[in-house]
Length: 393
View 1 (cartoon, rainbow, N blue to C red):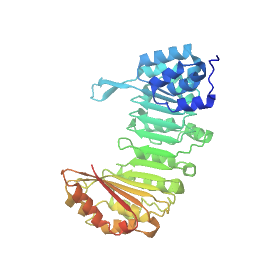
View 2: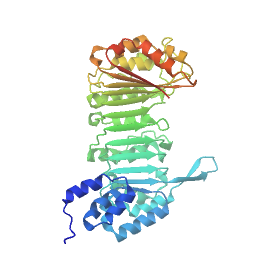
View 3: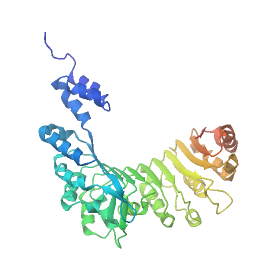
């Protein structure tokens, strides 16, 4: 009797695809028969994470013995650890082993996602940085977490080396010195001309300087087609850059999540620096970090005037959901918001069917019913046109 499978190979591959995150099952499939090996191997080695020199040694040995694994790698992450503190009290990265990974990079031609964590870019050897440059050209998704550079111009030069980039996650990235002219290097202009990068997703966290990345993107505003922006902005003196980025994104922007931990200046609100009038394709708008306990009112006795200012500027007829993340000490804190204006903006006829969500964190326990009732009473006009959801966390 023949031992060949009666199932078509594409059906077997599709079945194995469902096991993409089940390592034990994928290993079993890879040992079942030769026909199942390519698909199983692809999922087993699609995501490779290297954390120390031993990982590099083992992975190099694996590629040497089985060269067919290299084309399977789509996501490569190099994550160093901290080994203590230096004389000045700052954390010290154990990232010298990353130089040893440089010889692997030329073998990995199909990487589309690159992740770097706790790596000192300026401390890497020139050969290592050159090897990364070869990989960067095909990377579409870039994760940077606690990566440090020598100067701000080095950050710009690094980011400019990703002509195919579509998604950027910028977490706690730092540099020692601010360059006088971070965008004045002719090499960066040449890189920009070599590939027209068009980001669709941007994440900026509060531990990084969002202004540098924003200004870098705005150097070529006609190339920006951001569909999702998530940012936490602390640099109050440069809030206008957010408005410029929103305007450059235009109708492409579909989802916006904003958080201003230190609030915004009165001038930013008066000068309408955060207008959403150009974002006519917006579908989701999220306001995070609205801490009533730590906020101070200005312009009026109402808190968070930038929230009402942004809501009033929405011109998208595609808006589907709006959410608010609030932190309060008691139910009475909710009354400091400008509810009449919020209700009027959310109850606009063009927003019929809108879903509005409030995620409320309260120091006092057992007040969930009161919180829900308070918000429901304040948004009576909106509830005639849309759906209100309140959750206490």
